[in-house]
Length: 571
Image 1: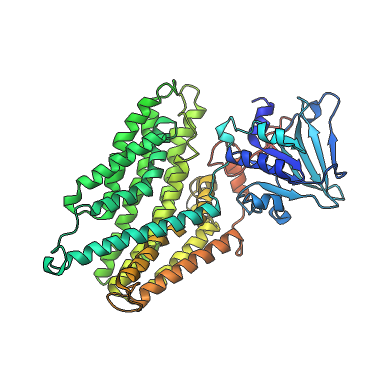
Image 2: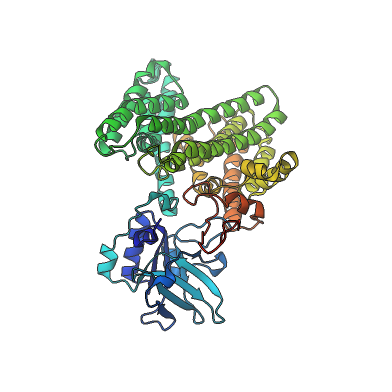
């Protein structure tokens, strides 16, 4: 593919400037468009910055990519935009480098006369950073507000993540809503326990109790499920009207089954089934004119995979939690201690593998086959991350709810060994050592290439590790809200007893210890306080013939024309 200006802009927007208002406006527009961004913080008329171009520009018709190392830190400008230093495998937010006095930045022009390449060197000439992209130097407000920053090739969009402040706001909203919902439910149950003479409802809960479950589903899961399935099935994001229709369908279905007195777990499945049954056909029909080449069957298969990996994952982990409770009730505490951490770990890993296989077979392989029309829409924007996030969110939710409910019913402190084992397994998996051990075992059983294909790290597995930072904390919302709601309803400040907010001391410690363990685990991983399993030559060989546009491709390869094809690295 030709190295035109748009290709360079799609890959990275490189801003060289003083970090003023214009730089900030341009940077935020680029990040909002989902593109990669790098910023070099300089001074006006900076002597440390020079420009270079050959007579015809052909000298610099190339692409290179050596981003800043994590040890270089992050500039104050990039930190304002949620940028973080690069870790061993991942990079969150934009790159940002503040030029020191001994740095020298060279900006090179491409064949079109536009700046395309930047090289940062130290006082001895050692290259610290070398990047290609669309370079903007000392942007003014006109350029900042009008420069086209969209990424035309969606395969070059960066994987999305979450802003810490919006995650905190979402957590706060969820806690307040769950406290209100659970408080009303407790009130309904207390009234049902009283006779009519005492002002109660004589064993009957209000018919509109399911309305709380419907509102809960519409305010939480229905939003993302509607977005995910609409984009997967039709290639276009759901409109406000589609969301409204989906919420109405889910509410009607959940209210219709009120006489059955179903659990909220089952009501969620009822709600999502009604939503997809109504919204998907309507949305597909409404967008026929938008995507003329869209094919029905590939989108249908990808949507089925979406539902299998999200709704199916929800049901799977619900069954695991129920099995754990059954083992505890049968007095099989040792079996339960081993079953919960290993069962959730294997199921979570299996769902990540499922995502990789389904995306490769149903989406990416179609893009590589010229005889097959590709799925329309950016399927890496919402649908694919939802599959990855569901695996971890439901696994962690299963561990917490199963442990918490088991302690409520049986008491005791057997949960400590289960929780410690879960943390150890999580740290081993997130730091890469679980895969390392599987690789070594695989090499003994089969050959190295096959072991790498089965157990080698991929872009999906590392994205899964990154999303764990954001998806893990939402599971604490319900249990914390339950304790607060019980405190409000009963007004009893006691640790043990039928009206204690956390039921008993052991249950209270489950919440505190698991929340602390989640925080410590994230700090260990994000700050790399423990060693990370490095990339060996086997990983490089596995990725040597890969496609940089494939999300499973963990290493970006630079293909040079003057290197023989026999060179496994072609670098």
